[in-house]
Image (cartoon, rainbow, N blue to C red; front, top):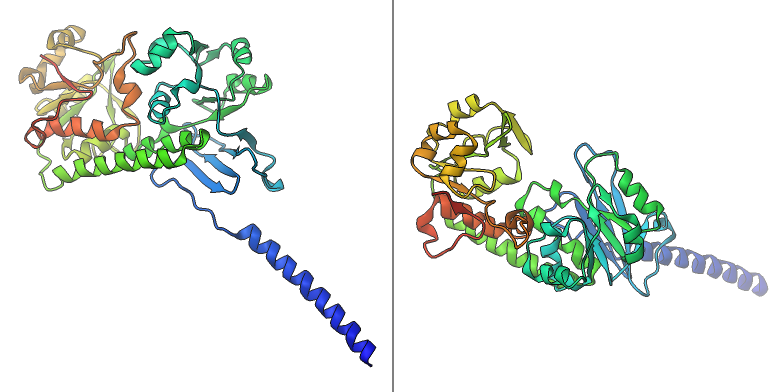
Amino acid sequence: MKHLLSKTFYVLSFFLLISCKKNETTEVAKSPIAKNSIEYASGLSIVKQEGYSVVTVTNPWPNANKKFTYILKEKEGKIPDSLQTYTTINVPLETVVVTSTTNIPYLEMLDVENKLVGFPHTDYISSEKTRILIDKGIVKNVGQNEKLNIEQLIDLSPDLIVTFGVDNNNPMLDNLKKSGLNVMIQADWMEQSPLGKAEWIKLYGALFGKEDKAKELFDKIVESYNQAKKLVADKPATTTVLYGSMYEDVWYVAKGNSWVAKFMKDAQSNYLWADLKGTGSEGLSFEKVLDKAKTANVWIASGSFLTLAELEKANPHYSEFDAFKNKSIYTLESKFGATGGTIYYELSPSRPDLVLKDYIKIFHPDLLPSYEFTFASKLN
């Protein structure tokens, strides 16, 4: 009987031990519950785990039918079998190629611009810091976005190429991957929230092992942006605003949920197309725009015009707007780098707080009397 009890106890202990091990394994798999570190960006998720991070890029281009998942593996990190099917990128990166000027400020803010080895059409880059690297031959010109020089990229052998797609048909991306190059799709340009667009700095923080610095920098931008919003929070939105200009025979106005329109809303202005649903822009005839915005107080012109005379030369009918007659026209696109790159296109996505302050200075100049425009210029 004693022998039977001992045997029974042993069997029960064995199954209890197995059960505990199973529960322990389950708990390890489930815990800790990792949290997405992204708060504002709608197309990016970064989940930090022990030894690796899971990056997911959704909505990479208009009407996208896919999303992209990347595993950022640290030196001693171990990737679970369930994640082995995704592209693995060893981090921190030592060399990188990026293909959009909007990426340059992220690199510089994190002090990793010296990791950049290639960029398509380097003349587009305005930043003085990165231009020095270009002039020294450290950053190579690797062709054009749609026609990257694959042979040159193979020779450079960067740890990663960060690029973007414009639709579901991207043969260049396929060719890069077939050549054995590591490629990551990013989609900061698809973000419509000013702070959401700027938050993509956290992706570069994860790529270069500078997550804490990226968060610190972004938090300061959020604070600066919200302080600017607070300045105008109780001010009436009385300034009526016309935006855009003619491109060939079409006037493109920013839709009400677009990145541009959100700045004008946060700056407490009465943007005349704020009720136009959607993101991006809407093409209108000159007559429709004139009918609605002839008496607008302020005109934010798209384009690199420097004077009213240049603007009128582009289209004599512009002079029919009251904003033209009252010399109340501004542009954010007239400041350039040494080789012709537009500073606004490069820097504004990563510094929305400065864009907002420019708009506030335009619509409520008394609130920022000593502030000097970062991007905006008034046409004279």
